[in-house]
Image 1 (tube, rainbow, N blue to C red):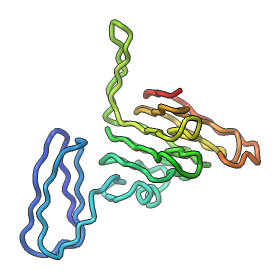
Image 2: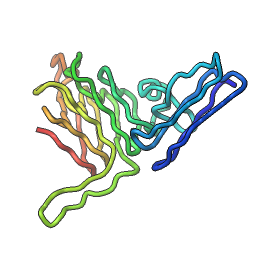
Image 3: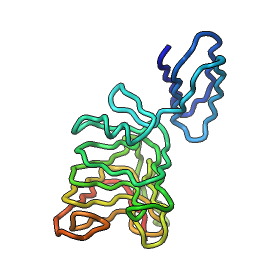
Length: 212
């Protein structure tokens, strides 16, 4: 068997056991962070970890691969939380659906430790599972949904950076930064270069932003 995909719905756990044959790739996905899924493989089977995103019926083990393989104007949907080791640039028109999951950016690195950079493309971010916002009697705001989390150093980078004539729309979901801007829009061709003036744009139609 070349590929097996095992997905557990929100609120459920379980185990997957196979006792004969050879499976080249076993992909696990859980929709609840921290859910334990014990796996018992046969000897010699190759296990390559869980899928993190899908485009239609195609599943991918990295966000970068899903974005690369997606057709223009496609919807890329997360199926698990992701921790990035470098900035993820998007230079293709598409929609990213957080689907209740988080993308956590790098703490250090090039490009100012942005989590997502929208570069010369039209990108929409949504969370199809989002609930809220609601405001309590003492004015606390509650919003439930996936997040893009910037955790770089103070004054460096953002959750989403829009540059080089990029067009960004937040429909739902959360952008978060404890140390800097949750959303940054730059009127130049490169976040790190500042060589040529060029207009970029961001539109907030929903969601929730937390930043300095």
